[in-house]
Image (cartoon, rainbow, N blue to C red):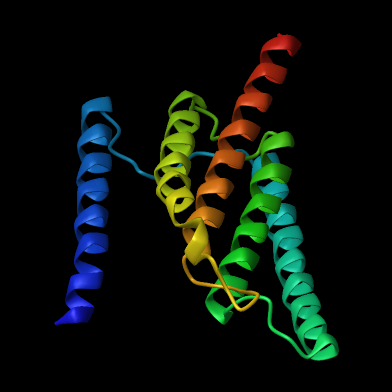
Length: 171
């Protein structure tokens, strides 16, 4: 019963977001959900995936070596994994965005900026009230993940804004 209580909010939120996306896409008249990219953008995305993968690989190797050498964990396995995934995501988004391969040919960054900030604030905001629960005996606990995810999306929002301003200056 307790597992259902934990999973129920996630299932409800996922369902609401999926329905919202479906309705918004229907209102826009988009029948295809696939983004359209040109060949150059696809090649750049491939490089971004590669850099992201090697960042993730280097992070996990570094964390593994660090915990073995110092004979100490700094976070739970879950926190290590989520931080690594966020680092990979940040490398991918930053590289592909500044090489003009993140946003499709017929897309605008306006909605993406708003969604990134909204998701980031919704994640980071509540976690700021639990700062005292984030560390126990010098080890980052699972409650840290919400803050890390929130900061990741806020970063993506800022990078999208910066790129948007740079593109306005070039025109």
